Length: 477
Image (cartoon, rainbow, N blue to C red; front, side, top):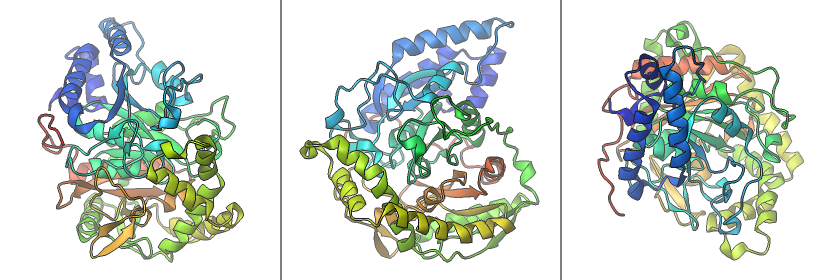
């Protein structure tokens, strides 16, 4: 396999055996970035001077057998721009924030540096991370390396696109309505939405039960590795859980005998036939790994989920965006204005809490019987990279729906204490990957990683050398 598509686990083994150095691996991803970036546009900046300094230090540590190594020692990693670094810009994809300098680093940023990672750049987001696609007036259009006409998703779209294109080994994301899982599905990678409080955050969204910072990578084991670095209590976040939860190394063999509930439509979501077929193939793959899979139904409706979500956004994220924008609404993206408008028109936050409890109950009862729930990550094969009208409709099979109705991720932000792992399930007819979500019981992270490892092994998609997109050189769009 080409160096820029190594997993973090494989790279670390090669570092230890001295068959590869951190500097050589950084050289490979930097060269790949130079080739891909004109067409992908996944990065807001590169940090190469600092990265090469860190890589050389890691190289020296691996050269000495008596040196301790951090869990991410020498591994190239990209940070989502939303996670600030003190002394560097913190612009949130918005012209209203252009030139803003962060005074404090995000807790996970410090942990990633302390773990020895080679941070070599930062990734694009939509403005204020409030869209399922990634384009803005500030940073332009980020494209999916599997199909340049289509989006890699959002809001962690830059991270997803960069990983799929081979521009880094690991990346971070954040998720308030699917922002890790949507790009993970569209880009053919693995992403994890931790349960609320597992990973420390920054005010005000560390108090938001919908919101979680999390890991993205090209294997289940890599995502678990990064998750163990960023998880655990933090002195600045009273919502962060104590003690730190340490995931065991994912072992798919342990999935045999587990039971999984398959629900393709989560009640009444329309799902593209190709995505349904790939979801059922994933269920069959789990069965071949010894997992008991039963098809079930849920009494949810899209309207119930969406009403709950907008009531929540109307209480927290919508007012946050409106306050920041102030008198500069002319500088904002149409999707940002649309988000704030919809949030302002929603039911009250208190009503939303009632909706959330009503939505959790049937899921909670289902997960008393089953170890996890399996469902598609998204209902649609894709969206235009520069999707212009936030109120526009997208195709889902024979139906046209608003984007939020195509994201089967949202229900699991509404019930935010469940862990959710998105794993690739196949390729759609448009050449873009599809994904499935493995949803666990509240705070039962280990189970979703065990099942994810079993699915990864039996489907054998991302473990194949020919899985990654065949984009060999940058082209103009």
